[in-house]
Image (tube, rainbow, N blue to C red):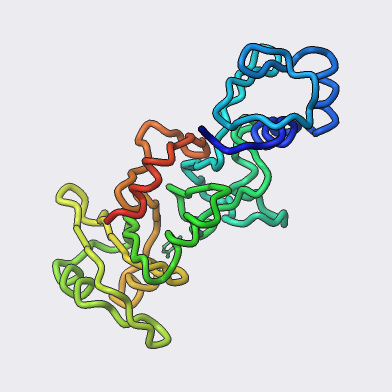
Length: 239
Ligand code: URA
């Protein structure tokens, strides 16, 4: 058994662009079926587990949606429309819903994994300073990385303004002396860039490749979205 909900509310919550008035009209036109029977009234109460069809489209109720976006450079992690395109502009029509927001931010020039959701409670757990959900970044540096970075990062760097960072895991690439990965357990403003700056280097390209135990799908093109399941999202919080 799911939850009880008005038919019009359920349909509107799952089908972007469909209004309550539309659901009423669809009922009158005999276009909606609930468990095989025509729905006559849009204000009828249904169960969220009921089998609901609008025309030929099955409406499967999902309380929340979780979207993995491979963010391109030049797009901002904001819900407000300003001069720049926002991550919400990249969500395809079939994944759109009211109340979507990016759970966490990447800089405008950073690429990679952004979680977009309408689940405020999960986002709060993920972003809480006490949660320490690890975030993995692929970093390209201006100058070759040094062996000493590993220990400096592991001890917790003090960055500009005297902010002390939590211990982070640095791994230099064996193939490319300007490439490395860094795992952070917090999210200070411009943190990766500021950490390398204090070490005398500079980040020239940055991409987030994982949040918690969930990796950015390597087949997901930059600028594209992929719906992920709630159970996978719980993995974001396991570390
Ligand atoms: N650290 C940065 O400097 N920028 C980001 O976008 C994310 C982490």
